[in-house]
Amino acid sequence: MSMKKISIAHFQKNILQWYKLYGRHDLPWRPPSLKLRRDGTLDPYKVLISEVMLQQTQVDRVREKFISFITKFPTLQVLAVSSTQDLLVEWKGLGYNRRALNLRACAQKIIKDHGGVVPQDLEALKKLPGFGPYTASAVMAFAFDKPVVVLDTNIRRIFIHFFFADQEKIHDNQLTGLIEKSIWKKSPRIWYGALMDYGSGAFKKISNPNAKSAHYVKQSKFEGSPRYVRAKILAQILEYGPHKNSQIKSFMKTDPHLLHYQKNKLLQEILNGLEADGFLQYTNNEWRVVNN
Image: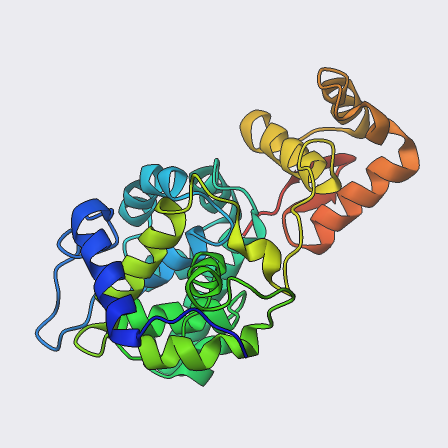
């Protein structure tokens, strides 16, 4: 296997020096914005919220919404009993509305299965609604400072750039061992924060190394996609209240990206999907936000 000649120690030094100079030290879900507890942990609830928000959403957008969301839903207990209407209104602007419902389901499961305490166990975290290996590992690293392997798109591009620059079709299992060896044991929390910032900030003038990953998929266009239509219809009903089918069609005429979906079959598929996913319900010949 051909790799660049760089030691783990030198790699760590490069990343940490860059982070000291250019890192995003003012993010509200990181120290010193969140105070460390006596046991060295952060508030795992707030870390959990930030990590779900950051799934496929830009940091600057999350920065704007995080404090507002935490103010509205300050604890797991408050989030667990929140209404769909309140939850989605607060989530507006973050995209992927399913994540908001998953967060509420997470809160309910943590209260039911873990006594209202976010578990310090990787496998238990993976079982939370909407959680995958990355989000579970990120909560372990950032909330509890545990030296677990965390792999996302920013971290992937760093390791490909430094260690696999002359290769193609690189699998994640080729990266995980290096990621584990490179963890700065003094503080995995600081180390992964440094990696995240380096991966998002230090590659702006070079080609994306992630294109060499075997897992690389070019993101499809959002405008005009079924997800775009779902988001627009849901936002309309959240803001203006229940809509009949005819009212939805009338509203869709105002956006050229929605025109194609006015066809009865396509529109019904979208509305049925929103109903099946727990966003809308159809009562008295009107579509309205689920009342719970």
